[in-house]
Amino acid sequence: DAGVTQSPTHLIKTRGQQVTLRCSPKSGHDTVSWYQQALGQGPQFIFQYYEEEERQRGNFPDRFSGHQFPNYSSELNVNALLLGDSALYLCASSRASGGGDTQYFGPGTRLTVL
Amino acid sequence: GENVEQHPSTLSVQEGDSAVIKCTYSDSASNYFPWYKQELGKRPQLIIDIRSNVGEKKDQRIAVTLNKTAKHFSLHITETQPEDSAVYFCAARSGTYKYIFGTGTRLKVLA
Image (cartoon, rainbow over all chains, first blue to last red):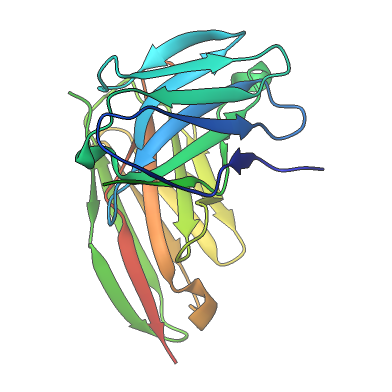
């Protein structure tokens, strides 16, 4: 039973560039949430995708966008990168039926913006 | 806005002693409270969770208590072991799908 996977593991970009991060949910899960974790901080909710639509968003600018595919995998896109976007980006999957409470995290993508 | 405060930020205990981490949330509509353990360089791992219709939940050496009136919940680890050393995060589900995390507690278990 595959857990949550993310790619790439690490990424280095320069200011102003764009980046796409990918997430495959745990088998049987249909909901994907994305989080940004700065060094020494707790994860911050970016948004959640279900049925290929964004259904809730945290306090992040429109530079952060996402997508969910029919196979439930998801992408996080960040445009016009800023130095402050350097962080660990985590995705978490859950199953909408039965309350959809329990989230399982992927290993994360470490993004460094120079 | 919604907020979760977590204390202490660091905690050192002797092996075999108990550790307690406390969180307070601001959104009275929050109804689900998970706890995650994150080891250095690894993903957060769910260790226990509690829903708002329950006051306490226990799983072997780990327990969580919830006081809805005071809007706080706590993680209790008994008989701590060196492998319990990690950063622990509490979280509260605020609104329907949004999870708010605390700032983390670095637990160090001294052998």
